[in-house]
Length: 159
Figure 1: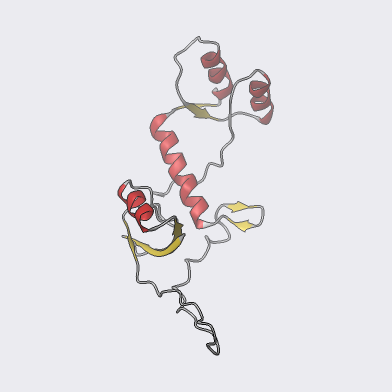
Figure 2 (figure 1 turned 45 degrees about the vertical axis):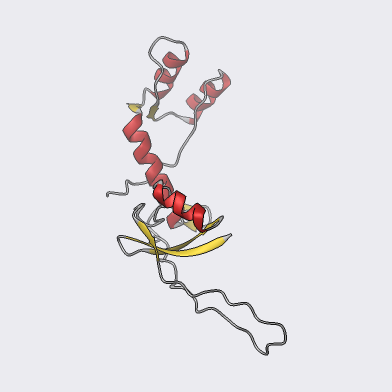
C-alpha cells in the first residue's frame, strides 16, 4: 500500500491510500479519484515528504515532515451523524450519490410507495425512482418483497 498527498483544482489537499502507484494512475485516469471536500475529479499528487524508517543502531528517531493538516470538518450547523459533524469524504460521496440519483431516476415525491408498488406489479415500466415514504410505507414495501432503501439526502454540492 502507498499513501499519496493529493490536491484538487480547487486547492483542497487530502491524503489517500492505493495498492500501488499503477493503481493510483489507473483510478485517476478513470476519474475515480475525487476530492473529499468538493468532489472534483481533477486531482494531482501534491508534494509529500517521504516516510523514513529508523536504521538499526541509529539513536533517536527519524521522522517524515508531516503533511499539511486535512481541512477542518464542516461547521457544527451542517449535516451531522451520531458522533458529530459528517466527515468531508462521506459528505462528498453522498453529494455525488444524490447527483447520480437525480440525473438517472424519476422523482415521484410522496407517491413513492404507490409508484414502487406499480413498478413491482408490472403496471408501469421498470425504472429507477426516488421520493418520500413514511417508515410504515417503507416497511410494508419490504414486507411485500419490494426492495427499497433509505438514503441520507444531503445538500447539493453546487449549493
